[in-house]
Amino acid sequence: MLYQKPVNEITWGDVEEFCAQQIPENVTLDYKRDFSGDLKKLIAAFANTNGGIILIGVAEGENNQPETPISGIDPANGLTERVTNIAISNISPPVIPEVQVCPNEDGSKVVIVVRVHASDMAPHAISNTTRVYVRNNNVTTPVEADLDRVEWLKNQRSESVKFREQLIERAHERYRYYFGRQFRTDLTVGQADGAGIPSFGLFSLSMCPLYPKEMLVTSSELNERLESFRVRDLYQRNFPLPNKGRGRFSQDGVILVQEGDENGYYTDLSGFGLYFFKQVLLSFHGDRQQHGSSCMHASHIIGRVLSFIFSAEKYFSQIGYHGPLEFIANLEVVRDCPLLRLTEPYYPGEELLHSPDANILHKENVPAAANLRENKLEYIVRCIQTLFHAFDFQISQEVIEGKFNQHVEAQGNG
Image (cartoon, rainbow, N blue to C red; front, side, top):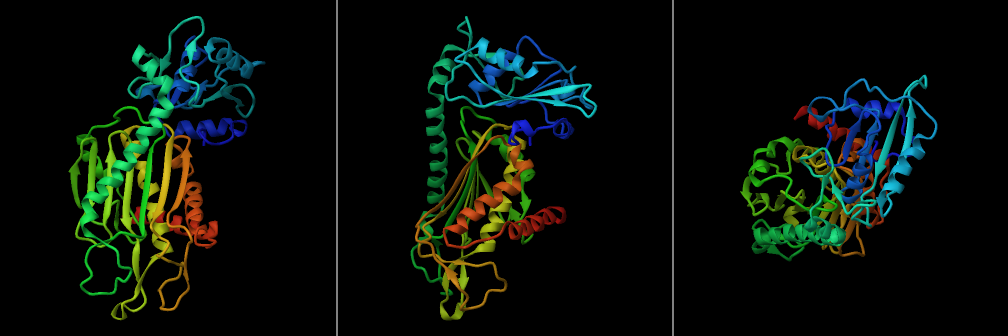
């Protein structure tokens, strides 16, 4: 909640709840017992990297985790202005953080929440010097950037965006490599001998660091942690693969492929932080013996979005990434692939919904990976409603919440 909640609504209780999770200091989080001389370096480093949150009045304990109960600092006039002045007066170009002073119940202590956003104006240097500081994954204090890193910072946003797009496109290319030879283009799937993977009705989901720069985890480490982010879907099957499937090493990660299956399940995990999943969503509608046509089931789309976000939360926790993310859900080549409403069982003659769009895209930024734990339902609702609106299908938040709760129960039964 601290990453996304409006800063002026954050309370002492919110900070207590956040610290109870015992999240260690990381590339987007820092604990400070009190004001310190390196606060300007820390704010500049967050602005130069992925942004982050500083909690002043929360001491750092063992393993870089917060000490609880939180101690706070003595209240005083002008605490917000003190933080803002440190940032504006000592950093060039200036950084203006969000600041909230949170008193405890009796007002005897306060915690200061300082939220710094990743800056489009990087690099930010400490005034009167040429020193530029950044935040590294394996270091909990700001470190001075070398000349190459400073030059990279000047172009980091555009270069990182290009690199992120390359990672995602490479995942699509790998999918085509493994399944392209099996693609078929007919829309009738009732033939008993129908073979191959359809080249339409494809559904891809991806999450990637907003500004990927460096390897977060090796291929071997990813391979060892595969079981740690598997989840159970609404049908009590494993996700990201129904079966454990075969894992393959790639140049930068691990690939999971479910070959010999009409749905073409595919997962691409990159050491740079990309989590990519793709499959065919088509199912039978009508009588199989009478060569029923293909459609996409609304419940299958909901189930995939649920499973992906639940699994992604675990994935980013396992690789130790806590920064901002880009989330994309994409229905590909679906103009001739109708959507079947949320009705079970499925009866021939039910209304099928069509979209005028060949490709349907939902894209949004997640301010920090921790938001996946705190606000999963919000991301799931927005994604599903966007996809279904393309078929002129209104689905209520209450219906999605029902599926969400079923998914939570499935994890307990897995």
